[in-house]
Image (tube, each protein chain N blue to C red):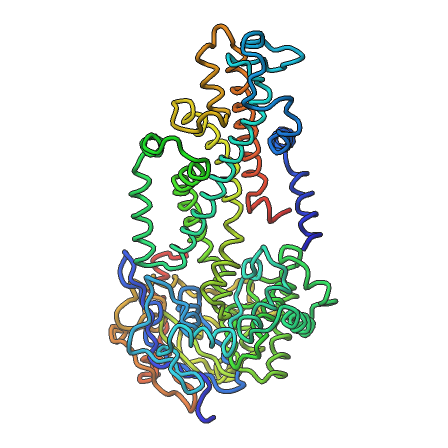
Length: 340
Length: 287
């Protein structure tokens, strides 16, 4: 197959709430190629999770994917599929791993049963055969004595083990694309590294693509080959991972990198980006980052377009046109307001 | 699976307070006696022993609950009454629980307009006072056969369960594991039966337990005002009604059926309250 495995074009997912229209995802375009790992980063409330749920069409009312959005996967526009067709894509060609392993499993069934269910749903496998495959999969994701642990209920397992179960469920059908929504956020640091290593290992073995959603730049550095930074429901920067770390362009990306705790660095206080993400019902007009930006000037009232900085590196920032402004940093507006 | 059930039951028993355990045992005995009434009852329920010599006898060793004005043995009649009262109440509540659970789950699963219409319908039905509806219905349909009585009680009692199930299922639908199941391609029916149904069962079980108490009291009330179960099949309500007619002279004729009603209702209420506490999902998870 030529072209990317997944190609999102101008995805807009709006929620029609009483407080107004929340433009949670507002014109996002991104691609994931075969076998590639793309990191989707940004703070909470930037639209990462809604983007992921939109791909699987799991947006519930009052949310709606606007009509001119396109999500092309394996040559088909997922937004045009009927309910039964999209159901056969879910878990089969595209699977999702959720953040919270404590709640992502049904408390009343054994974990083996839940992993087996995926095979029963998609392959119509018999109970016995599905169970056998579930045990193999649990073994594959590193659950010791899987044939016994498969009979455990979720509450009998630790967070790390449960996340392995969630991964086993996602990988049961060998999907072409796995969307991992903050797969390590809820876990202990030591377990985080194990889970990331497991994901990398499985990706190598199965040759799947991975869309890794995270707010942790460290996780991105370890796993992704390309990074998409989201802010305010938009893609604000996109570049290969080494470029993002070596020469970030967008002030928001700079902020994210500066906010990373570093071992052995001289500074003793963690840097933060002043202010918070505004609610999606009231994105600022013009540049959505302007109140929190230390470079913003008059031009911030214009909405910046994505400009190419280098091959494969785009940024939604007026600095692309007026790079000299980077030499005049100032206190961002949000800092003056005494925001947290 | 079987081992799980045994372990689960054992844990449940261990978690129950003493009062609930006693209630459970008392109820088990009552149900057993009702089932075994033909074997354990000393006489037949409609048997008139000696209309002259044995009418209106006070409790004695021969007739522990006394006899009524037709010289029928009241212990026998209370035992047979248990068959009617307990089976009517249990079956009616089970019916309510099933209809209500199904209605609530279907509403949530269908969602949107269907859900709204179903809920407005439910509101409309809830607006009709149940007791008045029952009195009107049963007054017109008199005498009512027992299966019909079960159906009438069952079909007018599921509105609250339905609301309960719907509320529970709505919150479940947003829970991660349900979204996760959908993200893995689980279909609507499977989602409803595997992910919603088992997780709404706890409130339904609590409702059912408390509901049996309500229906026993309700059935007794209906029989008492003469629109429920009719002679010669005695129910506790009918027996109590008969007894009150001559309460001053023959207090035993009302006391024992009344005690049976109170004991059963009390036990079901205590058990239901305890189950509500013990089966609370938050409590359950930490177990």
